[in-house]
Image (tube, rainbow, N blue to C red; front, side, top):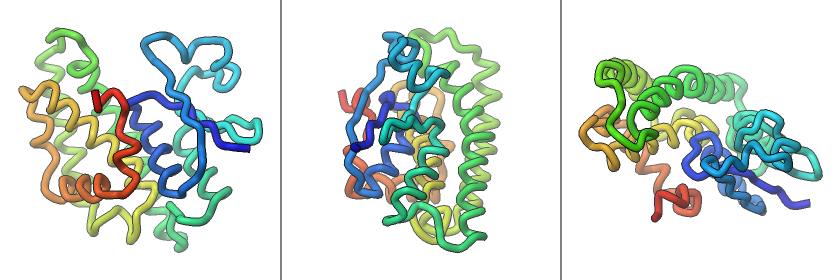
Length: 213
């Protein structure tokens, strides 16, 4: 049976899975879910994911939830075009970067977006924004120093697909609200990293649909 991929436009977690699907050249059916219209809380979707969150991947009648789990599932089920290195130590590095993005970078970035991009006005707290920008600068400096080559492992991996969407969201914030200078937090190595991801042959296909409007 074909893979059905439930996602929301601009979700960094869904974007990671989408990149993985394209990288592995797997056939799938896209199901775009609207966060604004409450589609994630409807009975049909809650039957797939009782937590009412995306992404979700359904294959052979089984729903796979949580983005990191989905990517690991795809890796195990479809080992061609791998996203995890063959060496156990290198795999640990990839998993560590994924955990650091999810546990440290994302919560800070999310706080900034909640004060800025996710608001329809300028009601964000300037003191909170300034503090979060400082914390975000520290996090991105850490990743700048951690990135020793073209990617976080010797080859393109799940770590890169986890990290890139976070940077893209900051670029999106800068495009919409340049007064916060979010793009200045992305230094030279991370900027080059973004360009490498954006040059992948399937990258354009995965760009969030509403960003193209």
